[in-house]
Image 1: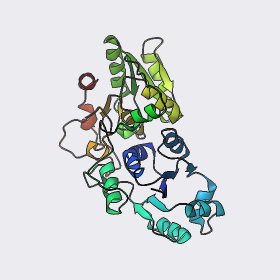
Image 2 (image 1 turned 90 degrees about the vertical axis):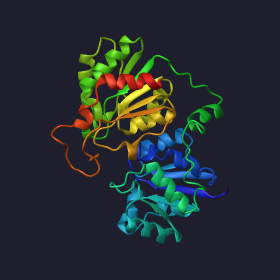
Image 3 (image 1 turned 180 degrees about the vertical axis):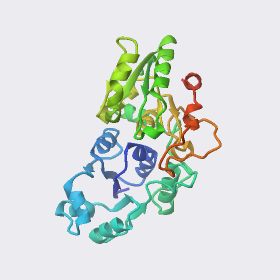
Length: 322
């Protein structure tokens, strides 16, 4: 095991956290794994010891690849690796990189075709196995047998002490189409508080417009966090006792830390996007329509897939896995 691997992935947090277990599998073959990805995600993967070095995809030297005259820095980066996995739909990008390094590039579609009811992780594991990059696509790196997050803590000789009362609630996602009504999350917050637990709201940059509404609607002194750093978010998640949120990258990250996680699905498909974790419950209303988030550009007039989920259903699901 002496080969160096470079992963190139331009996707958002949900796309990449979904395949963290696949990266763990790749560590069985490669002595070192680095990545070209979004800066914030690179920082996250580095902090979790999934990669050793990351190069921000936003950097000008990476963009030069598309100009026809690649910067010498990106050429040197490409040539310093034994294998390259490119998560991309672009055959042109594959050809450009292949021409620079003069070796085969393993190009994998970031997601399976939207018409297929296959999980993104299974899709990636299958492609990796077909190319001989992992031994067995049927054995995944999920929980509880291989709790990477817990083992990481043990390697650091640290103990992750969860606050048994703190429950995090994230009312946003990367798309408003996937969001359950904020008023429902407020009901969840108050119910959890009435049960003797300490709920806290976490908001990312995409949900800054919700801050004032939650501050006004919740009891005085309630914690409403606005976070932009994924490392800070991991710390808060790892010290909490549970998480409730929409289908989002943050929900995938919560599940990855191993805390009990309830995820509310609407127009997106849990068969394709269920987060992997030690204790995860996904909720989606039974409807006569198929998940349309990846195949349709707009929502139904009545969002039955979301509206059929009540705060009571969410609370019961959470108490079942907590």
